Amino acid sequence: MGGVGVGRVQCSRSSSGAGLWIVGVDVHIPTSIGRWGPYADQCGGMSVPAELPALILRPLALADGYDDKEIARNRRSGLWSPVRRGAYVGSASAEGLTRRDRHRLLIQATSTKLRRPAVVSHVSAAVLHGLPLWSVPLTAVHVTRNPPAKSDSDRNLICHVCRLDPDEVTVVDGVAVTTPTRTVLDLGRLIGFTPAVIAADEALHRGLTSPAFLSSSLENMHGWRGSRNAARVVNFADGRSESVGESRSRVLLAEAGLPTPDLQVLVYAEGGFFLGRGDFGYAADKVLGEFDGQVKYGRLLRPGQSAGESVFEEKRREDAIRDAGWQVARWTWPDLDVRDLVAARVQRALARSRPS
Image 1 (cartoon, helix red, strand yellow):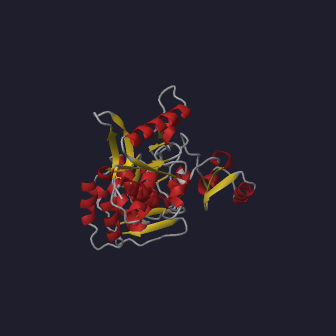
Image 2 (cartoon, rainbow, N blue to C red):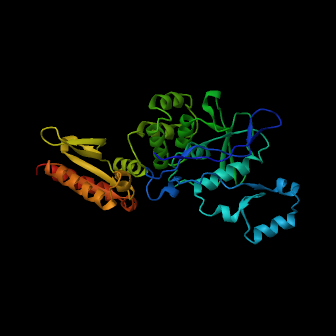
Image 3 (cartoon, rainbow, N blue to C red):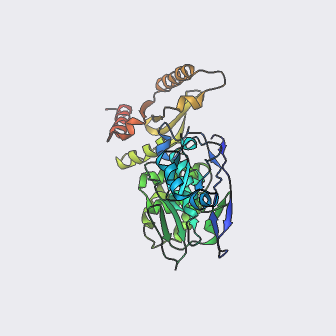
């Protein structure tokens, strides 16, 4: 994993003192997109700037001497870029922001308008925990309040009202947010199966939660809306999956009805010489499946090694694996979007490995 991006933190208590209202967000999240592939921004992955641009709030701008006409003029001219109504950033500083960066800004801007304290949750919590969100809209901030609170949702805010125990809330650099375990389960209840699995695999891979924690917390959601969907995600999730592409591949193979492959399969030649590791494998059939993200070779580079040398080394590795009697099926990011293509390649490899 890569380094971390650090923003600024400013928090103030609500008037009731019952919880945090976020004014600024400082989130430690990985800057490397190696695990998330070339479409990292679609997944919520990113290479974040050291700091988010400063948020310009209308009340503070008015207090600093601006008037509404001047604010409107700055917006129309493109000098200020809107985050949501009454909140802006300087357009020059907004260039290059990823989906995740913009959502972090939206969290800041929306939280200042909260009439009652709430805990950042669901997809917004996933953003703060640095979990990938493949094909998931980030147009609204999600928060959760305990009943009997009422929802005050709007176009930029989705308020969920359901039980939230104290041990399901943590603080990420001053921000009250659901724990990774609760976040994964909430995603499983809310979003599609594939993106929920991707997030769950990442959380498990990074040690943010565990199968035992997920299963135990899931029991407390019995009868909740979407809890069966969350259970399906928990049962399928596997922390050995090392990228969004691998997680998507696992789902595609399962949906095609193929046997469940083992993950991160080690391959040895006769005599015990280590040949390499495959993303997916059927050891009994001597079949490997390899998802090839475009950044894969780059993250395998050794100091002083060129990308071309890495590709050549990978080719030699695959030749040695084939010489040892293994069949290899490969696919890439674009292949994941072609119906049945990945499953067909694995099926052909399995067929080649079996005597006719």
